[in-house]
Image (cartoon, rainbow, N blue to C red):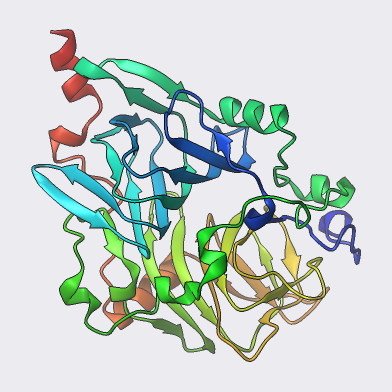
Length: 358
């Protein structure tokens, strides 16, 4: 059956890739000063991914993230206050806000661009703590359709039938396209000392040590978060050489920061900085490799294990799950971002709302 979805085909030369540099910024519903480039919406799960641009002085208002949220700061600087402390979120900072968390506003000190995953709806709060607006996957889908903005396919079957070229277009380039985006994750050696991130659910990725799989020494990993509950792993990858044949047993997504990535059904010239790639569950790659002499550096969310084999039709020889990635992180001395903060009632959604109702 899997061969029906992974036949030797090249339907578009694009598969699940979308060039965010060739997309237009769209005004976000009910969020003044905030614009979006929608990338993916799942009506099945409520999960949606979007680039977010916040104008200087504007903000993501205080919110309850009902299913959680994670974000990469790609350009600009933001201020985030919580628990009486402020973190300065600069390019290269990654954060995870757990489900049902109520967080304060995130203010742009200068124009800022982010990559944001919303695991479910976000309820933005107004004055007094009441819900002022709710942003869902359906809102993002409606915004994309109204503006003829492309979204990546969610399934392999859709990839096989769809002929949309999401690498074309005339849009507004991301800020990372104009500079060496590898600096986001490969910075000064003393960044761990100078980082202005004080909240444990954010991390300056430049301070995270590189970890290695002994079986693939040409691939460096910065492991940021591992969920033992869901199997979700968030990484930065520095990729040289070639990854062996493998199948994605669960979906995965990537944002290319530096170099050019080559992969099955991708364009011959590869995908470069600013291209976001979604791999549906079941996608099989005979290889993934860097197509230049430069480091290939990209962000990665793996929503489940990878199964490696020796080529098409051969048996599985290895499986990489959260357990292996956790071992790599521990060997490198990496400190992972926590999956929840349930011991602190100030972050729980019900606490402030209950007080408001009273």
